[in-house]
Image 1: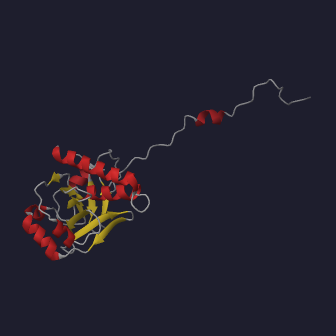
Image 2 (image 1 turned 180 degrees about the vertical axis):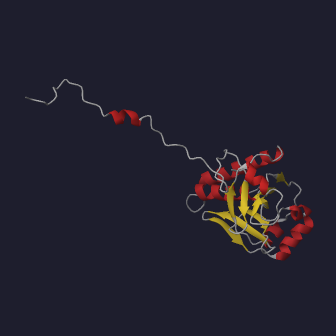
Image 3 (image 1 turned 90 degrees about the vertical axis):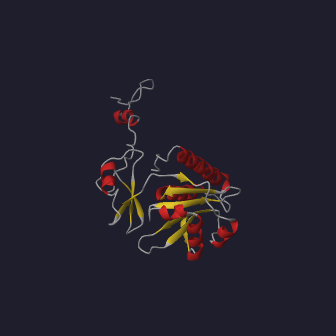
Length: 217
C-alpha cells in the first residue's frame, strides 16, 4: 500500500513551529547590585570607592549611603547646575594641557587630588592636572570647593564656540564618555558623534533649568 501523501494533500505542520511566533526574548531587568531587587529605568547610583566603579542601586539601598562620607560606597547626587558665570580664560584652559575641548574634574578621596579626565574613543582618559592651575580656578570660582568628593564634577564643554560649565553628578560624565565611545567613527568621530554631544549638552542644559531632578541611568 502506498503511504506517500497525494499531491493535493496539505502538508503536515510542526506544532512547535506554530508556537515559535509567540516566543519573544524576555526583556533584561536591571537589578540592584547590592540586594538584587528589580530596578526602574531611572534609579540611583552608588560609587564604589575601592574600585571606582558605578553601581546601580534601588532606593532603599541608596538611602543607606545618602549621608555616609566614610566607607566603601558613596551615593551619587542628582544635582545638575549650570555655571554661566564660571571664570575660565582661554589661557587658563591651555594651561591645563588637555587635548580636546571636553573634560571633567573631580577630587578623589584616597589622594585628595583633583583628577582631570576627558572622553575619547577608547573611554575616559586621565590627564595630570597641575595643582597650581586648579588652585587658580578655585580662587576664581569658589563653587569648586563645594563639589562633593568622588561623586560630583565640573564638566567643561569648549567644543567649537561653546563655553559651557556645569556642576554635575559623576554618572553624567561617564554617560558622555560612553556616548562618545559608542558613536565615534573614523579619525574625526563623524557627524553622528558630534550631533550626539550637542544633544547631550542640550539635555543637560534643560535638566539644569528644571532643577536637575532627572537621573542618568
